Amino acid sequence: MPTWLNISTAIIEADENQKAIITEPVILGLITLFGVIFTAYLTYLGVKAKTDRAQQDSDRRRMSAMENRLDMTERRNVGLWAYCRALIDHIYKGGGAPPPDPPHTIKDLFD
Image 1 (cartoon, one colour):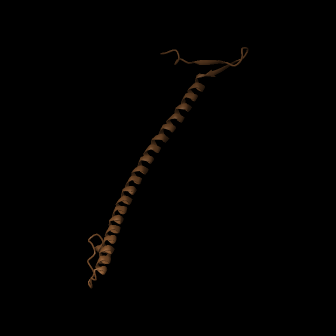
Image 2 (cartoon, helix red, strand yellow):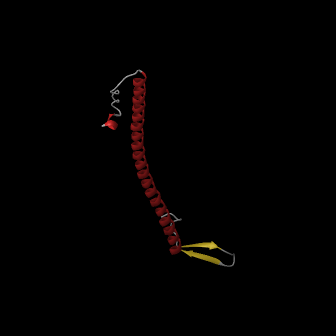
Image 3 (spheres, one colour):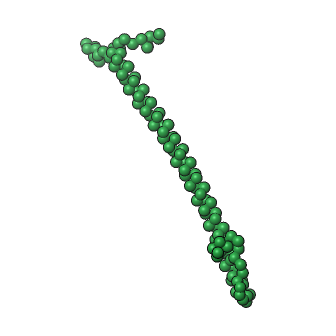
């Protein structure tokens, strides 16, 4: 057994005339206290990492859904612009009834 582990009593010199004695139970208590604090901190880091990962996954799914929604909105806007352009061209060319059919991207708006 190493000598540094064989602690029956540790002597800390507080003054030359007076010596304070720290016994083995006090040292073991301090080691245990630091161990508990360190373990609690590691547990906190683990839970925080798990929570952060779950939040990131949730944010990633939400962002993907928003990107899909934006893509659909942009396609619909392009379709509406194209249909408006077709209606304007139809009117300027003197076309009568019926107006041109809407593009397939916005057909659901007219059903």
